[in-house]
Image (cartoon, rainbow over all chains, first blue to last red; front, top):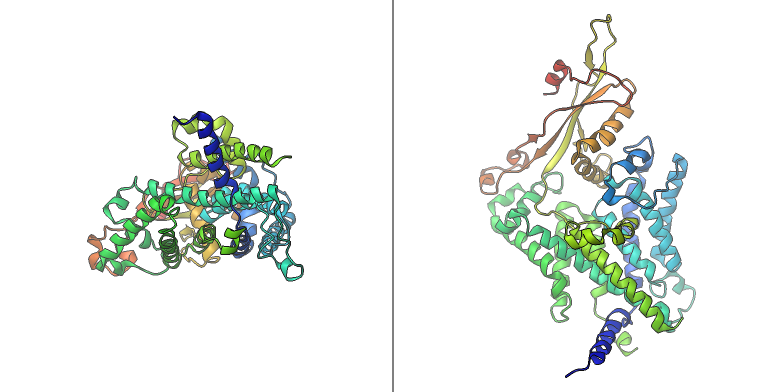
Length: 299
Length: 196
């Protein structure tokens, strides 16, 4: 009979290896750069409309923004500048901060500042936030755990990077990578299961409803009624991909096909429905499932 | 601090955070409701209190808020107080032109429309208040939220344009009074007729 202490020790070893055993941190740098650049373009668009979104003379006053959410979504902090000029400066600062973050100039503390600024604007006007803003909240938070400036940093052009082992910092980096991976699985898993509640996803017609919505579709896809097989395959592929991603992506032999399917999936929704930023943010997180280099394995 | 202690503390936080990201997408569950007190402030402070429901349980239809504004007509005399339409044309939110102001900010307006249309109170506090701020002459807004579900793919075979397969369905005309304007709460029938 196996002793309980042995089981506990073994579980602790597995836990330690899973959460703290990651060694390939260049993925953090690559993700920070790609994700940061996507956010920069996305919020550069929002910058053009700051007055409508965040001024009290705009769409929603500060007071109303605090009232329209139910108690379940009450924010613990609701600071926001009152002065219009200050709001404009703050949003510009946020935009510059994202760019600096993408360049990898500063470490964790700076990524926390970017997260704080991001949340400040999210809480100011929740109605105008969309899926990519939500993803940004999660991914910026996980970046706060990571020292991602060792790789893909503009500083490496001027200084030789120091590649020494820092146990505490590396432990947090490893946790960050795991949370990126798990978060992606949670998003796909829940979205897939939520789809299973809807009849159109079962009868194979849901894609028809999505791509013939002229507010979303880039072009008029009504002609696809002549080829229903495309609608049927697309609908079932979406449900199967999202529902099974959280399981299949952990299997090394299948992973490349899962990730390739994901890239095609997001490319399609980006091209047909214009969900460009959402797709880009999701795909950028695939970096954490890319194969580990030989160098990292040896280390 | 020793690495083991550090990992122990981080492990406790990992478990806590896992609860948050795994439970809140299913916030109606019993476990989620029982743990709300411990998890909700944390989840809300990081904007992590969210269900992941993209295009679920089915893709939502196209929608617009159609609206006209009206102003109280100067009274000819105390007994004949009437109303007039401030604008003769219906307007749409989000705008019909999907490049107004640009494709991305138009989409933000679209998502805002979905969010505020879910409850009449949200509609009044956000959209109506915003419309009323556009012109001080305005005393009220008449609006209707329209959905455009599309025909079933089998019935749509003979059609070639998206507009052919749409079946607009209005949620009923609603009359809102601009904040600060005290007028009769009953919508004047000539204006409602004009809106129809």
